[in-house]
Image 1 (cartoon, helix red, strand yellow):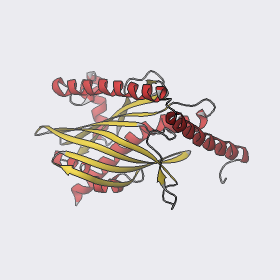
Image 2 (cartoon, helix red, strand yellow; image 1 turned 90 degrees about the vertical axis):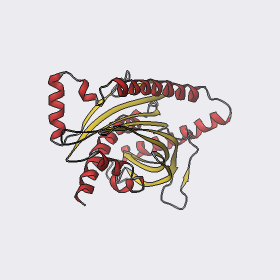
Image 3 (cartoon, one colour; image 1 turned 45 degrees about the vertical axis):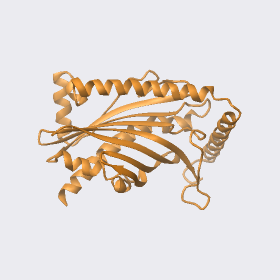
Image 4 (tube, one colour; image 1 turned 90 degrees about the horizontal axis):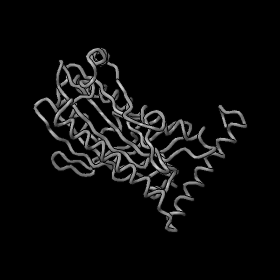
Length: 287
């Protein structure tokens, strides 16, 4: 394998084979009725999401609308100064099992929030990008490889996105999302998105390409819930995004292979998404 010592290449190959074996074993266990671990994992994720939903609903009603507005004055001024310089600010939410993670039997819950500022933009400038799902494969390349609006009715969208993630290994996922937008005022908008289907793609781009049954895979992404907020003020628009995802836990002996992907990707993806959104909005404003 080019770029790796022979021993490392052998270890990587063995690790990938072990991942495939584990995914197959998981599917086999479910086929024989051993659902306890998977059900417990899903329930833990659902409970966490319900708590996050409640917190978001409360802050929409009583504030702060943007999480930075709730910081102490000194920290708030510093943060907003960074945003005005074009930086993307990222922060983990909760987590008891390391950086940005929470406990879940058989899995890990990752919760990150971030914010970016687009100068001279109007709220509608941002919405034209966020709601343009047919072109997300352009705005968010290479993370989004394919994108398409499957249905659209007013403020409600059903969207297909193919994600490509690379961190030692490359993982391709076909996903469907249910998205609804809500106008809070003339200068505020929020949206809520749920991944209603996530399937890992085997041999993507080849004649042998196929999807694994959702939930019977390597566990790189089992759940994804997203909350967007946009506020027009200070001569531009603040864009805030919180993403809660569910992945498999780290198997004994394969931490070196799995952990970098599982622990780094959620934060890096959010940072990239916010930066790419800012860039796309600015580009559209020039046209």
